[in-house]
Each structure stands twice: as C-alpha cells, then as structure tokens.
Length: 463
Figure (cartoon, rainbow, N blue to C red):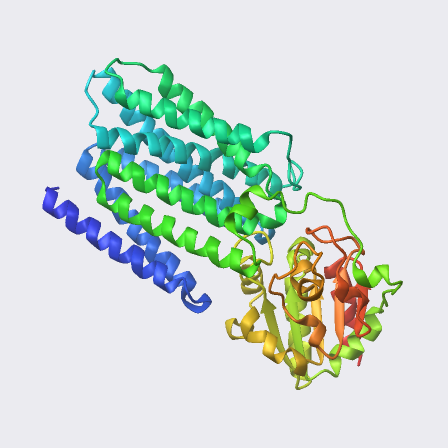
C-alpha cells in the first residue's frame, strides 16, 4: 500500500470516527454511532498492519478473530451493573497498549544504538507516563467498583506530597534520559515503575461515588496516551482518534464536575466522603421518617397521572430497571404519564442510568435531564426515588455546612408525594443524612428495590 493510499484510508477512518462520535450525542443514534466508529477502527487497524508489514495477513486475520471473539463474549456475559468496571478495564487496556508501544519504540532504538530525535523522545516519555498512570489508575477504579477493595477514599499523611515528589521524579528522569548521550536503560525502567505507582496513588484517595468523573478522566488519559503514541510511530489515525477520545473525556469530566458544583481538583485530591456520617438539620430537630407498605405505594402509583422516576446506583445494584419499566407500563395503561429524571452523576459511570434504562427498553423520549425535569416537578403527583441519595438531597440548597452545598439536585421535594426506595437509612456517599427522607410528603419503602417493586406490581395488577 502506497503512502498516498495509506493516508486516504486513514482519512476515511477518521471521518468514520468523527461521524460515530457525533451520533453518540443522542441515545437514539448511539448504537449506530458505536458501530460506525468500530468500522473506522477496523479499517485503521488493518491498514496499519498491512502498510507497516508487521505481520502476515494470516496473523492479522487470526488476531481479528480472537479479539472479536473475546469482545463478543464480554459484551454478552458482562451484566449491565458491571458495565462501569468493564469500561474502567478497557481504559486501562488502552493505557497499557500505549505504554507497551512507547516502550517498544524506545527499546528498539536503544538496541540499534540509534539516536532518538528530541521531539520523538518527548512523546515517548509522555506515552510512558500517561499510559502507565492510566493502566494502574484504571485497575484501582475497577477494584473499587468491583468491591475488591474499599470504595471509600484511602488517604494517609503526606500522600499529596509523595505524589508530587513522584511526579517531579518522573519529570527529572525523563529529562535526564532525553539529555544524556549515554545508552542507559535504568531511567526508562524507573520512569515506568514510578508512573505505575503514581497511577495508584492518584486514584486511591477518590471515593466510589466520584467514579463517573474518574472514569471519564481516565478515558481522556487513554486517548491522550494514544495520541502521544501516534506521534511516536508517525501514525496519523492514532493521533486523530486519540485526540478525539482525549478531548471528549475532558469535556465530559468538566460537565460532571459542574453538575456536582465541584472542581476537578477537588474530585481528584479532595478525598470527598472520607468523613463519617453526620446528622442532617432535620433529624437534629427531632423529626422522623414515615414508612409505606407496597400496598399503599401501589395505590398511589395506580391513580397518579404524572409520575417521575429518579434512578440511582441502588437501582443498578438491585437490578430493578425491568421492574421499573413494568410499573411504567401499568401506570400508562391507566392513563398516567411516566418520565425518568437522570442526574448527570447518577450511577458509577457517565450515562450509567441511561444504559440501564435502555437495557430495560425504556423509550429514549421518556428520559429527562436534570435541568429539563426540575421545572416540571411541582406538577408531579408522585416522585419515585430508587437508590438515589445525594442527588436529591434538599440540603444541597439550604444547609451551608453540608459538603454538598451548592450542588445542583433534582427537585424531588417539590413533588406532591415522594416514595423513596432504600434498603436502610444509611447515609449517602457524602456522609450526610438525606433531608428528603424527613419531608412530610415523603414515604420510605424499605427493602431491596427489585423485591419491593415486584410487590408493588402485584398489588397494582389487583387494583
């Protein structure tokens, strides 16, 4: 394949990437966009392997078949509740690939005693650093989400100073590697090892509920690492795709930080949620909560005309999305209307609730963003909160001492009646009690969300 043909094929792949990314903006076209981007990547991979004559066509086919088989198996077997963990692992694999490619190019030049140009040397060092941080950081994110390790922030004295010192050490070793005329391998291995450690230290102080931002950021890191690797091996399509992933991840991280009224620095270094649970102003005033039975909840929902469902991570844990869809159908058969209010940081990854609801075949047009649904909440007959906590806490608007003060929330407390499905009165990730639970219009339906909703469904069918 000539150079001109190669660049033309890469241009086609880049156009497919951009088209696919654009179609990801809407749930209705997201699946098609994902396919378009996948075709673009397939074209880019095959063109690269053929052009560079790295391996024989048979090996290319074997690799494509093996990778496709593994991907198909993962897509079919991984449960929707485990999707955040899968995304974290995929981010890590992307970082590991950049680390390996950058390292291979460096070692190849060292073995051939070739002088690495300064610009190539800089991009190699960046691909090593960012790739390693992405790899181990993503593994820690996976471990927190999979509950292999605690999801709470892990902090210790001098942690920030240690991370800063390690970052400076990486910079110093990289500069030394670039400036020295000697053929030395120990700075290369030291940069790799320290960068891997740095990835761990950067993610362990982040709490599990901040994982949507962290996953988006790690996704951005993997894209930036890929772009750096593209410069190393002079591959334009890798530069383009990496830049697209890197920029979109940063934009998404910024959107979610705004949704929490927090800075990215606070998410990364604030150890949010490390403190123990604190009492809300309502419980401190001696107010109590009111529980409701599945029978009473069924009556409220059966005769409601305007229902808003507010999903959270508890819905994912209980796998209650299919039961929610069934209740929606029962309400609609009686002439009522059901909408879903999705907070930007609900769940454990960007769009987590959207993915779960889509899996239950909830129509896309029923999903509403926080800004769209809030003006309608005063007309809502029943707001059903399933597993959400801090994103519906009215204390974010009124309690200046609250750690979530100023965070935009879904105004569930403005509804005429509120039903909250929760296992217990345990505090949310922010470590504070939810003032919504003490609202006179709130009824608590305690227990596993799926089991509780199944009982509600049975009662509604009898009405």
